[in-house]
Amino acid sequence: METKDSSNPDLTQHLVGLQERSLLSKHEKFENERNEKQFEEKDTVAMSDLMYGLNDIPPWYLCIAFGFQHYLLTLGSLVGVPLLLAKLMCIADDELGDVARSNLISTIFVTSGICTILQTLIGNRLPIMQGSSFAFIPPILAILALPHNQCPDPLPSNFTNSSTTFYLDTDGEVVDGEELWQRRMREVQGAVIMASLFEVLLGFTGAVGYLMRFIGPLTIMPTIALIGLDLFGTAAGSAQGQWGIAIFTAVILILCSQYLSKVTLPVPVIDGRKCALRRIPLFKLFPVLIALCSSWFLCFILTTTDSIPDDPAHPFYRARTDIRVDVIKNSAWFRIPYPGQWGLPVVTIGGFIGMISAVVSSIIESIGDYIACAKLSGAPPMPKHALNRGIMMEGIGCIFCGVIGSGPGVTSFSQNVAAIGITRVASRRVMLAAGGLFFFLGLISKFGSIFVTIPDPVIGGIFLVMFGTIAAVGLTNLRFVDLNSSRNIFIIGFTLFMGLTVANWMKQNPGAIHTGVKELDQIFSILLSSAMLVGGVLGLFLDNTLPGTDEERGIKSWNNCQTSEPGVYSQEVKKSYDLPFPMPKFR
Image (cartoon, rainbow, N blue to C red; front, side):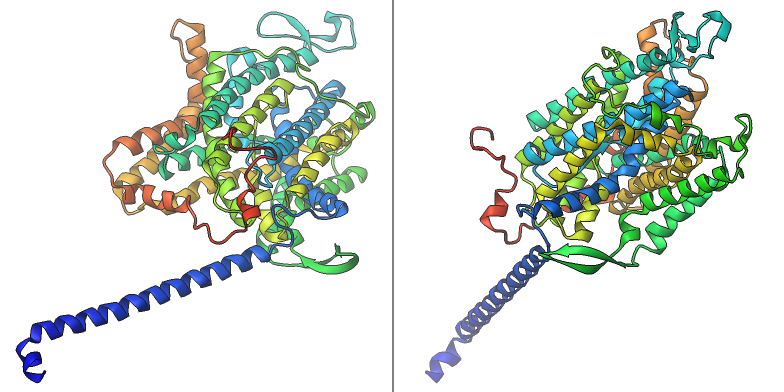
């Protein structure tokens, strides 16, 4: 044996190597199994940490309580949209104008409630709130900035010998204040409806995945960032009524959302069948609501003490709380929004093409919210059929908003997704309760009219922080790209600067384009007036044509971020995305 071994040293070495590799293979297998087990245990613990999971059914009173919390989180954003668009739509600061604002707020509440219920039931089936999207604001502003949509001055009172205010509209017709703003709303409705058909088509055909091949961080960044940056003039216009109140509002909002975000306060809650105190981060959950109510109350004190002059010509007059108080008395108790309540929507080619950019931006934003919501809800990664269904349902919701006439379309609300991680309540029933609250409270016009009395500087202060945050959300996409690349630096700077420059020039020169064809003039005016569209299209073109690796462009990191490990999930949760009726044929 010794002679054999000594005569075959290569064979001995080979056998030893095989034994070592076998032991190493067993060790690696053991380590992998242990890591997988730890991952599964960690994932299971994360799921069990939820107070109520996706398919759990809390008691009815807890559903209402948790749903009301989501309602409060969304309230500030929903109220701000109609108040932002009211002046640009030529809604006057009189009794009829205040009623119109109240009706718009109620309509948005109703549409948000219905769209939330539909998305949760037959859309992507996640507990995700639907509400007015700020992505639709830039193209709407571009439509309202067209020469034929400029607000005319009121005619003299002796012109018609009537107490009603009349206007000579840009089309040469004499109209009252109601028809003046409703004509502009009908043009916005038509653009939203037609562009939303494109979103429905993308979701129905599953083409969203194909389009995402060409859309990377350098396209998404300017598209979303310019939504907020382009609205600096709107925020300043609302805040200029009383900059002190606006700054106070912004300071309170920053204090609550940033400095006091980790401070918890004891709040009585119902735990099972008994009442208990639980420490909840109220400042983090309701920063907009706290800032709005605090500044509103301050304006009320300044109004009752006559610290703010009661003179409409005084620049601080817009900070008074009694300017629109009659709207509460004049509004109907109940009002049901219905299709065509402002008249038949008007479709223009320019409005449709301009609104497409808002739809694409909304889709990108929603996909990110879907992924985050699924993770926080303890659900498996979203299958393609659920993703496509969610986008399709958002498109249907936007069409519904256009038909009813709520202004912009709907999208998923990120703040409600974040609330799931804080409250540990991911039940689908809770979001259905929130949608029901929006619907029923939207039918009560008196409730919506209360928010019309919010002074303009308070809204301006909210906008100062909110629009800046939207811009920052867009900039966060730069974490995926190589910021040491001169290629990327060029795209970032050029898209942002050109988006702001071209859009600002078009707004200052609305009639500058003369092609000889009226329809083409409108198309180019709307497209070039949207900073979001200009920057996004330039980013899309440059990122897909300039040489660069996937790592340099951030495509690889971006795609990795969009996928997650499935972990271990029960069979019940695996079917969480299926509709509440047989699925095979529907798939």
